[in-house]
Length: 408
Image (cartoon, rainbow, N blue to C red; front, side, top):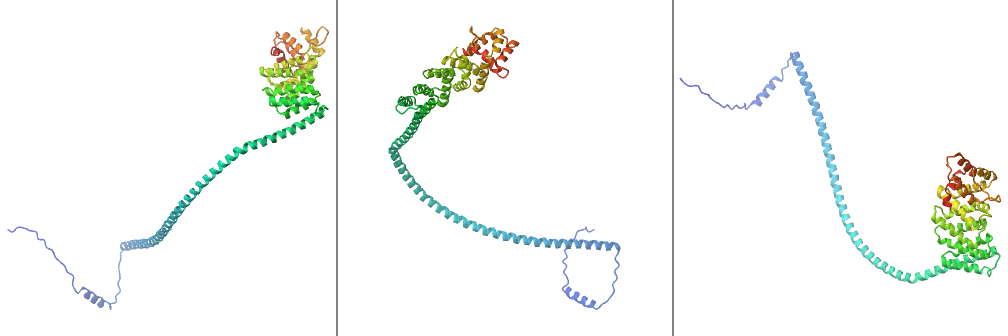
């Protein structure tokens, strides 16, 4: 029996060669045929056709949108091409600018080299001019200094001469009568280094205060030395204080140097300034000097006043004007008969055997000794303090009594 087998065959089909001719013949034969064709399409097919139409419309819309997008893309590509052309043009211009800049830098380098050479030449000429000026200055500085010194000296001489004429008018003496005073001013000016103009002004002030020419000369020598003392501020204020001390305490011109020395020594040893002492002398010195008359006078009374003032100033550090006002009240109240009688009841005697006041310094000394053992909280202490200074000046009375050891 024969076996089954597999046969593999390959068939090559070829379309008829006259297909186009046959198709044309069919169309010609059917061209004259008129017939009514009635199509029966089911409802389901209608829906399918509608769906197909909807998809075709959507596809058509997508194609239209794609066409628009392609148009936009084409426009963008054209703009990009224009921009690239502009960049190319700008790049060409930049390259041209760089070339121009390079040429400018080269020219600048040449100009700098020329300027450098010119600056070097200028420096050489300047150095030469400076050396010439320095050589000229060495010669002329001495001459100019001499001329300036002569001018200053001439001006000082004119001012000095004016002050001397003023001094002659104040004293009523002529040039010969003031010769010794003029010589004293010259000597003090050269030996102490004090301005002759300042000395003549001080001399005029002293003469106006009533001092004679000789007393003015003596007082002037004492005042000029205060310019060398660090505790005195200026010669004008010191002169005013010296005149107040001379007139209030009756100090003679020959004792003025000793009085000013006391002020300087106290200012150096205690917490008080010379200007404060001078201010106190001007405001209260007259009251203290009048109360001390017959007990202590002159420089002794002045030293006592300085001691009393310093004891308060060092303790309270109030201003000199405030302390001076308080002392003026205290020195006035302490001499009242009512106050003396009241203090006598407490065992403090402020009069001597003749019934006269013992003086402000001695009175403060006795009050300090009597009240030193009395408790400040004691009503009698408060009564005495208020009687002496009143409630306004109680701040000065307490340190005046308690710090009297400083005054000693």
